[in-house]
Each structure stands twice: as structure tokens, then as C-alpha cells.
Image 1: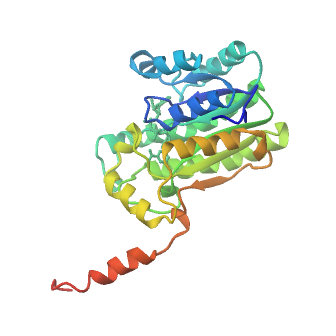
Image 2: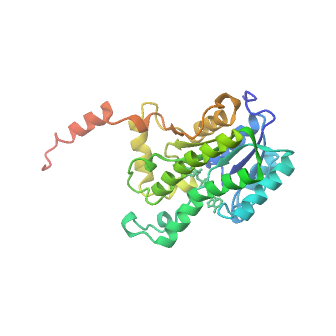
Amino acid sequence: MGYNLLKGKRGIIFGALNDMSIAWKVAEKAHEEGALITLSNTPVACRMGEVVELGKRLNAEIIPADATSVHDLENVFTKSMDVLGGKIDFVLHSIGMSLNVRKKRLYHDLDYNFLDKTLDISAISFHKMLQVAFKMDAVSEGGSVLALSYVAAQRTLYGYNDMADAKALLESIARSFGYIYGREKKVRVNTISQSPTVTTAGSGVKGIDGLIDFSDRMSPLGNASADDCANYCITLFSDLTKKVTMQNLFHDGGFSSVGMSQRAMSQYEKSFDCDCQD
Ligand SMILES: NC(=O)c1ccc[n+]([C@@H]2O[C@H](COP(=O)([O-])OP(=O)(O)OC[C@H]3O[C@@H](n4cnc5c(N)ncnc54)[C@H](O)[C@@H]3O)[C@@H](O)[C@H]2O)c1
């Protein structure tokens, strides 16, 4: 059941690939909450992917764009304003990709061309999106722009590789641009730091299953699902959070604030009870 939290609002959602994608869930919930939206993804994902079906179901135009191309992004904002009938109230950047992760290059053996791509696709594209929107004055006053991050930006988690550096940059861009966008146009810019989640991008991370299980057990509320994340995104697009900006907001069942849980401690102590050598 919706609450009409986004009634009359216009939004652009980048990054819905399939029904596991966080952006897919956000698109469904934004629609349910009364928003009019457009969807964007890479030309290949738009041509071959399931996003076409989502677009039909939600009555949302699909506008292909490589998020590293300023030209493509200008086209997304121009067409979206045209199709939706005015300035944009909310934008979701739900984009991430690392060739180092995909090709199993370890962090102490990075391919630097791949690293350039990781940073461009996963972080600098957020700056490009914000700069395009700012210059075109495409986002309405009180609007909200969100990107999705992960706690590996603050703490080292085995296997997250160069995506950790991309997320640190992404969060910094939200603060730096958020200051200017807030001051000049009253637009909010935030990142949500989401629990590890089973999606196409998430599945590429080395040891992801163990990581998901570990953070689920360490979090007092357990991991946040993609659906939970979508609900949180909706609140940040809504008028209920008008003074929240330049923040990295943890959405992880409490994981980021836990040092040692009771259960983990007893498991740790048990490990000394065995006959194995120290
Ligand atoms: N899954 C997790 O565990 C997790 C946890 C925290 C944060 N996140 C972040 O959430 C966001 C969404 O990822 P997801 O988990 O839903 O996976 P996903 O694979 O469904 O989404 C990633 C999207 O990025 C798009 N993309 C890749 N290169 C692009 C480019 N050049 N231009 C435009 N789009 C491009 C892909 O087509 C895809 O739709 C990412 O930023 C990811 O890092 C994911």
C-alpha cells in the first residue's frame, strides 16, 4: 500500500537491470507512491535487458545512457523533463562496475586502466550527473539526488577491491556537490550506505556470500534487503526529509556501529576450546 509520498513528483532512476536490482525496487515503489518516472541504463542493458518490461509496466520512458558520457546525461535530463512535463524532483544514481573485480585482479595487482573505468563509472558519473543537472537547472527547489554506497568506503572488507576507493570518492562527491547544490538551489545530495545485497553487481564481489552472512549475524536488525533500501530511498525523495543533505546514511541493520556482538564473541571463545594448535 502506498502513502502518496511522491504524488506529483518527477524522477529519474538510473541502474535498473533486473528484478534483483536495487534501482528496480526503487522504481516500483516510486511509481506506487505516485511519482512519474523515467528509467535509464546503458544502451546494451536497455536493448537486451528486462528493463523494457519494467518501463511498460510502470509507464516509464526508457532513455539509454552511458553514465560516463556527459552528452548522454544531458540527453537523459532534457528528454525526462520533456516527457514528464517539468523539472525533476528526484534522481537515483544506482550504478557500479569494476573490471578489476570482474577479472579477479586483486587490490595489490590492479590494472590501472580498469581502475580508471571503475572510478569513472562508479563515482565520477555521479559528479557528471550532478554537474549536468546543475548547469541545466533541471532539478526543482527542494529536490533530492541520491547515490548508493557501501561501508567499505570507511572500513576494509576483504574482496571489495577498488570499489572501496570508488565508494569513498562517491561519498565525498555527495558532500562537496551537496554543499554547492544546497546553497545555490536548495537541492539535497546524499548517499545511502546499503547492506550487502544479492544483485548482479553484488554477486561479482569475492566472498560475497560469506560477507552477507557475516554482516547479517553481526547486525542487531539483520541485513537490509533491496526492498528495505527502496523504502528508505522513497523517504529521502519525499518532503519528509527536506533538511537532510551532504550525508552518508547507513542503512545496514546497525552493522556499521557494531564492534563485537555477543554471539560473535562466544563463537570466538569456542574456537580456543578445540584440540587444534595455537
Ligand atoms: N548489491 C550490494 O551488495 C550493494 C551494497 C551497497 C551498495 N550497492 C550499490 O548499489 C548500486 C546498484 O547496484 P545493484 O546491487 O543494484 O546491482 P545491479 O547490477 O543491479 O546495478 C548496477 C547497475 O549499474 C549499471 N551500469 C554499469 N555501468 C554503467 C554505465 N557505464 N552507465 C550506466 N549504467 C551502468 C548496470 O547496467 C546496472 O544496472 C551500485 O552503486 C552498487 O555499488 C550495492
